[in-house]
Length: 160
Image 1 (cartoon, rainbow, N blue to C red):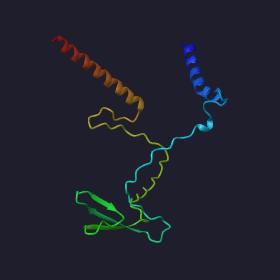
Image 2 (cartoon, helix red, strand yellow):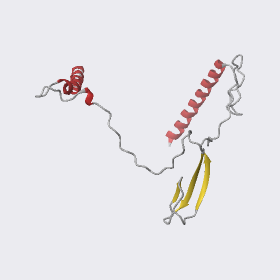
Image 3 (cartoon, rainbow, N blue to C red):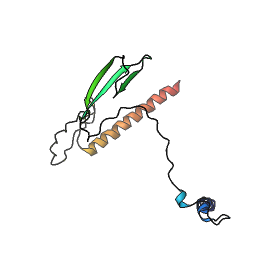
Image 4 (cartoon, one colour):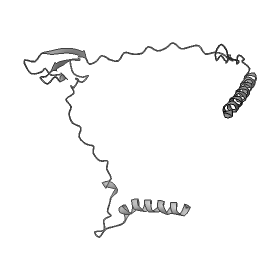
């Protein structure tokens, strides 16, 4: 099995290397490393999003026009609609941050030494100790009680 995997790996490496090394009739190899380039992706369509002015332009206010055409489609553009169509305008300062900032939480003072906390699993919990050894003994005792109850229930179910 190990030999088969080694042979398979050798064939893959040879399949990759041979086109760059083995010369054709004209003496040139089938592929050159300079032929390896990243393909150019498809040109994305222009979907007509309004362009904001750059920060070096004189005005930082941008006016958007919102209007509805005869087909009921709503358009939001930075150019006014054709004449005769009612529209709403909104002016936005492009230098303003639109996302509200989050105020930092005040730092908490660090405790000098870790303190053991009491385990509180509910008002009827048998685990009220801070001693880990005592807690493990309580857990093992509870597990034994649950195992005994499970055996009793299984015996009653198997009677019928």
